[in-house]
Length: 283
Ligand code: NDP
Picture 1 (cartoon, protein in one colour):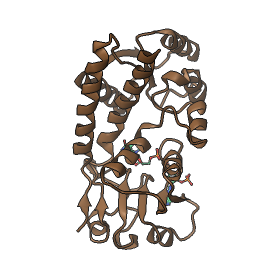
Picture 2 (cartoon, rainbow, N blue to C red):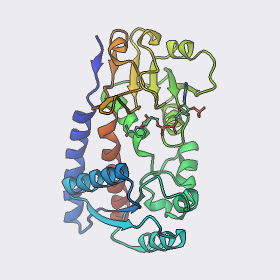
Picture 3 (cartoon, protein in one colour):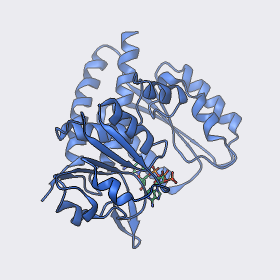
Picture 4 (cartoon, rainbow, N blue to C red):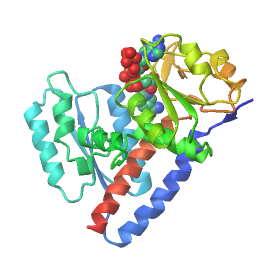
C-alpha cells in the first residue's frame, strides 16, 4: 500500500515556519502585505479570497482586500493595480481569476509589477522560470515541488510524466521538474497512448480536471503519484484525476484528494509574499 502524502500536515508545518519568519521580520519593522483584488460576485472566487485572507491573518501577514463590482471597467482595475504597485506596504498583488469577460486578463496580469507578482503569472516571471532563474513561482506547482521535497523524492534522472499543459499547473510544474534534473514528458488531450506514457513514469503529476481518468492499473509499481485535480462528483464528493484506491495498490506514495495538493496552494502564496517582503527588508 502506498504512503499517503499528507498535504495538510506539510502545509501546517510550512505555515509554522512562515509565522516564525514573519515575527522576525516584524521585529525589523517590516510586515509582509498582500493585496487581494476581487472583481464581481463569483461564489467560488469569494470563497478562495476569504481563504487567502484567513491564511494571511493566521500567519501575521497584512492583507488588504479590494472588492470591485462586476461592471468595473478595465481602466479602473488598471488604475488600482498601478496604485498597489506603488504602495510600499504591499509586497504581493493577487488578482483573483477569472475576471469578467469585458476585462482582458492578460493585460491586467501584465500590469502587476513583476516584483509583486506572487502568483507568478506575469510573462517576466514565466520567462525567469523558463530560463532557470525564478523570482516568483506559481503557487500550485511550487506546492507540488515542496511536497516532493518533503517526501524525500529526488527527481534527478527520474522519468516524470505530467498530464495537463495549462499555464497555471502543467507547464510550470514540468519546468520545475526539469530544473530538478528530471526527464519530463508533458501529456495532453492529443497525446497518443496515455496509459503507456503513464506506465513509464517514476513520478506522475496529474492536472487534467477529469474525475479518476488516470487508472490505477496504468501506474508503474513503486511510482510516486501527485494528483492536482479537484473534481466534484455527485454534487458533493471531491475526487482527483487519479483512480485513488487502485493507484494505492501500485504507487509507493500518493497524494489524496482532498487533503493533498490543495492545502499547499495558499501556503505557497503566503510563502511568496514573505519572500517578497524579505527582499523589501533587504532594500
Ligand atoms: P485546464 O483545464 O486549464 O487544463 C487541463 C489540461 O488537461 C489541458 O492541458 C488538457 O489538454 C488536458 N487534458 C484534457 N483532457 C485530457 C485527456 N483526456 N488526456 C490527457 N490530457 C487531457 O486545467 P488546470 O490545469 O487549470 O487544472 C487541472 C486540474 O487541477 C483541475 O481539476 C483543477 O481544478 C485542479 N487545480 C487544483 C488546484 C489546487 O490548488 N489543488 C489549483 C489549480 C487547479 P489540452 O491542452 O490539449 O486541452
